[in-house]
Length: 333
Image (cartoon, rainbow, N blue to C red; front, side, top):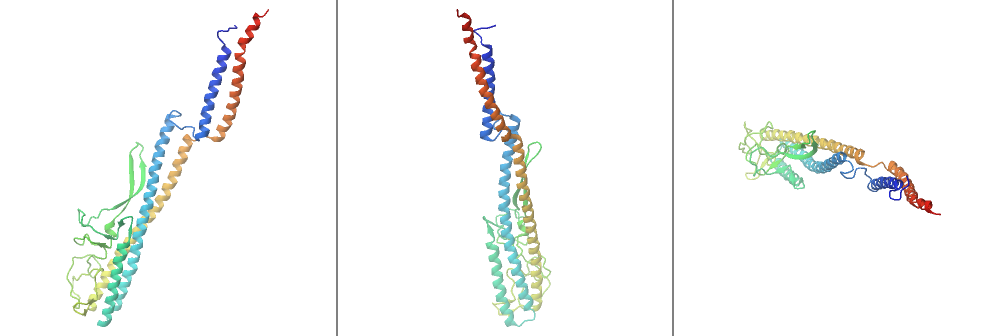
């Protein structure tokens, strides 16, 4: 039936052209943004998953920065303690040389040891990075004696299957690393070098020693202020006392070596975690891409096809609109 009121062909052609234009708009948006899911209306589920994963990836980027900062702090502490070990070894050498030496030589060794002790303190005080110093501390304001708060280095950001968030840390026990503690109240607070030790190198309650006397059971010394020469009374330490001092230094060296080993292990762990975090971030990026990225090869091909369809649709609509003009010819004489 021919009608001038209802042009079915034109309506069909218009609907087809509108559909083509919508598809063309979608394809052009994908090409311009690079995403096939750029907002929730494109695919609510994929958009939600991708948004959460992007948020987690940003958190992991912060974790990576925290690991880098923690690694630098560990490097600083390790450098300081490694130099301190070398210096304490020098003190041990001076003590060994002082055994059996004359008073004059012991006085000279005492001067050298004092200089080395000052250098040890300098190393510890200078081992600061970003306001953190793990070698020269002050627990004056620490509520619980001997329980110096662990340093926590953020190492991971984890999202559980139920969506719960946890943050993993690498803990550094400063109590086991520090060399000096300005606020020590007893041996539980003391550092490796300012802590009192007996001749076996074990930590012990301080017992006064008179330089020049024979070594006595229970005599104690600290690496930070032991001396083979008493300048006040101009007297040198007995050989027995010097041998006790060597034992004290050996105990400190053992603890410092353990501390350096712990720092090295923490450094290795941080390095491994940095590598893992970087790989994990790349994996998440790839996962997000699989969900929301547009296939540009596919979209470019689709764009060309839709452009052809659009041209054909316009042509079809033009032909359909001419049907009304054909009806006029029926009324011509």
